[in-house]
Length: 139
Image: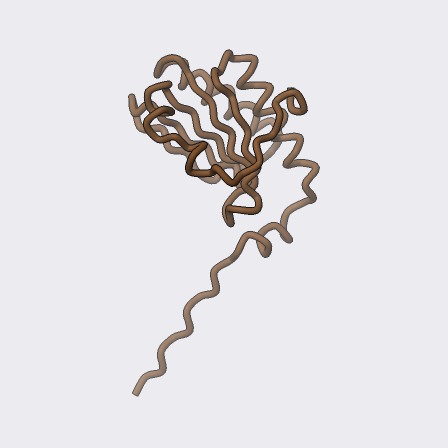
């Protein structure tokens, strides 16, 4: 009778975080992302601290683009900012004309929506226990 193989241990966020540098770079990246979105005229910009609720990220950045081309322009700008900080983008969902773009930079996850999709998915309600960070501290 064969013994069952042990399941692989899942690498939880604290273990992964121990491999990364201190929170300073995360705060800098968060500020640069918010500033880039503001400069490119993103609408209804919000930053949620979800570090107490999420095991996969610390911050959610939510913003609207007024059209699909505007969303693409916001995505391109964010890619430049993230690359300039030497942060690896872990994943990106950019289905054409979906009205929703997700960029995963590990500690910071950005969701870009058309206004219709922002209303439809209501991420703020999903993360209602998160702390909303004032934009004045990030701009």
